[in-house]
Image 1 (cartoon, one colour):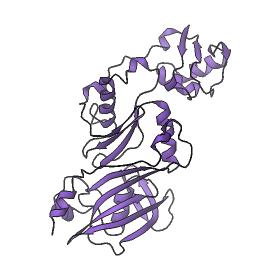
Image 2 (cartoon, helix red, strand yellow):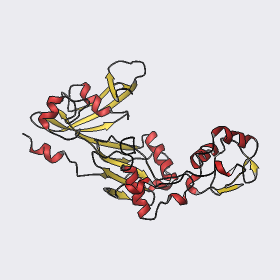
Image 3 (cartoon, one colour):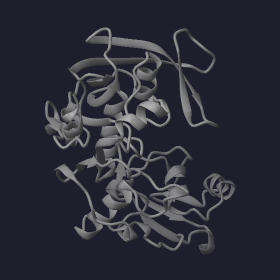
Image 4 (tube, rainbow, N blue to C red):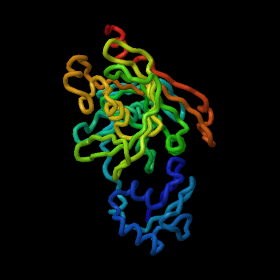
Length: 319
């Protein structure tokens, strides 16, 4: 028999989800059978698969030890450099200025160096995070941006902050503004673009349509022209909907692709401007809560902005 005490960062999870994350060697069929047969109890009492765990709950697991062995931790995040641009930090979260070229999560090509690995390594060095002290939680990113896009990314240090921030993103109680360089001059200096975005997973790209299409999702993109040069414009964008590649594809669909964008731009344009990445940066974040924010209430009304946007000095030198 194994006993597990539910910690603060584990609270709020469903029983089955918690056990699946904590004990990856425990087959789901065995997990559900053990719950039905009362071989898994909370506080000595029978429980259901969808029981929400509370801090201080005591789980009793009458399951063979071989299925309760945690996978050996290699702590791959320790292989990532502790190299971060931190805009803001407190006990609950980090606001990071991610540089273009860095992925946010590991993938099949980049196993060790990613933004989340750097965050976990940083917090490990500060003794604010140790996997040995957690049953199931690890510091996590709240939002993500493409590898070749730069800008502000939120990271939650605890489960409560992660839950709240995820809900605020879902409720659109956060405003994220972007700066980008687009080809040419837009007809209107301010506008809200509307359309339908169709995602093609096989091609890893999206297509914009003026009319509804099967599988298409409504998109709305608000923009404001800040400055014009001879052949390009500096534009501020507010995503009224947040879809994959929305800014890049939507601007390209109206004839003004982002400079440096190898997927939605043109080879001739990109060769002429010589930018190493698409000129897109998530540069400003505003907290505007309309519902209770719990332990993060102190953030309401606050605004954070990064001033170091790699393509702005280049743009100012253009004729």
